[in-house]
Image (cartoon, rainbow, N blue to C red; front, side):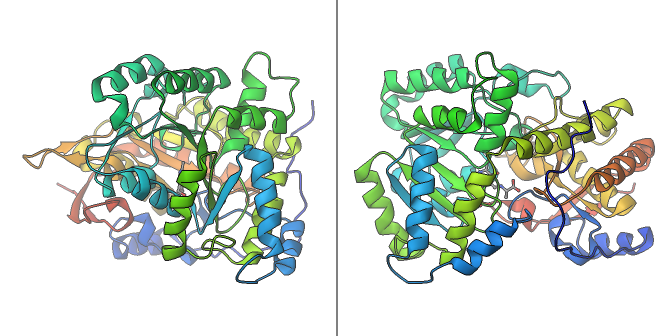
Length: 458
Ligand code: F0G
């Protein structure tokens, strides 16, 4: 078989600005060792996120021009609605300015103190919105998902046995929703199998709890099902997508991922009464129901992107490019999450930097080292993002200490990826020289975005 190539040509480019390691040292210091505080012009390869960073297609840009900006009843909305209904099979579609706006509306409606939301793994904004409502989020990842270096086909699966047990413990009446995040971003971009979705669906039916999908990366998840799950090899991606949504009562979506849009999201559901409540809140905080927080042009870009993302040539290239980087790193002995995820490569910071104690944030130290070495911006997904303090102020660590190299869609070429591999491997060779970090300042929620840190050098 020949090399799997990028299934697109480049029509418009953006320059990359280069700086020296010495300059980057000072950039890091000024950014308080927090990559979120670095200016993007100071970044050579930006792997902070795959969210909103995709390259849109010429068709999407044409859609942007076709966007109808009417306040009410825009044809762009109806095209958007029809596309989302077609994909999800859900009748009620509520546009929002991004995924977390859909989450905020949903959890404000059904969350609150005494409530529990159970998931394979909640993404950070999802968890934050749940907790902001006063409710509690519970992650029940399957056993395979807890071991970064042991490959398994569906490490994003939920532990169904633990789910049943937790529902019995907390009481079904206190659990407004079960949420499956597909793919499981915080757990390594790993997919959830159709079998697991079916099993979770069955438990939800048994206890009469609705099942929602956090569907940001639904197409990548569908591709993994096609490649890895028995009985799906001959099904088309739209067929698989249709089936996986058929088990859900609703979904939240960030169109900044698997819709190739720079902004946008939606809530979709079967319940008319819940949709009505959500729409009322939407009008107060996001906008009229036919645009949510979006411009008509965004709605166009999203509906076109949602169709493009299900093209098999694209998904094959997408997943292969992540696997390609994973293979290069594995060959050099770098500890990475295996197999590669759908949108990112996750370095195992605990293994990479075993000399740095967890409360000195090895993941964050690694993100800083990658930046200093090669101008690569990545993000810590570990105890800085998810850690909590106990009553004595001691850190309760996250399950995993990962560093995510998220690959923007259709943006970087193979030589960019080769460069990334070289930089990571160089940092790995010098890993003993990397120091831990201590926190100078932090916010009460989602602290990783704004936290200020300094290296511990003694
Ligand atoms: N759910 C998941 C699984 C996500 O990955 C994200 C965003 C959201 C919800 C929220 O969507 O950003 O549109 O408000 N993830 C980005 C990331 C930010 O970098 O992984 P949003």
